[in-house]
Length: 125
Image (cartoon, helix red, strand yellow):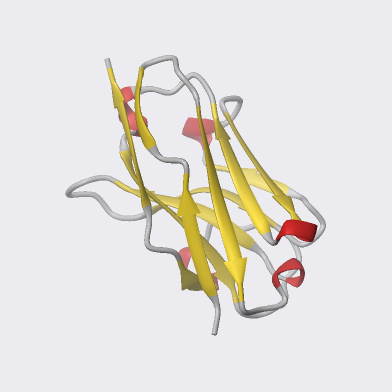
């Protein structure tokens, strides 16, 4: 049974930084694509960053240059380094993992099968 557990959320002022972690267990983690998504109140869940098994990455336009996704396959952990945070980054952040092999990172929510419980990020102005 796959489990994804996020950590590292919190409250920061605009311009600050946070590092989210997603620990995976119960699966061959390193073979599959993973991603970070976020959902603000009243809004749809959106893809933030994706990373494939080779470490190739993709980002939504609003976070390019500020966020960095990475993975440590030896630790079965994915990270999201978030710098220069803005109030509009406030949301619940979720990590996700695909259940089938695929090339290339993706922000397509339909690709992902397994989800964590989420960690809250709040950015104040």
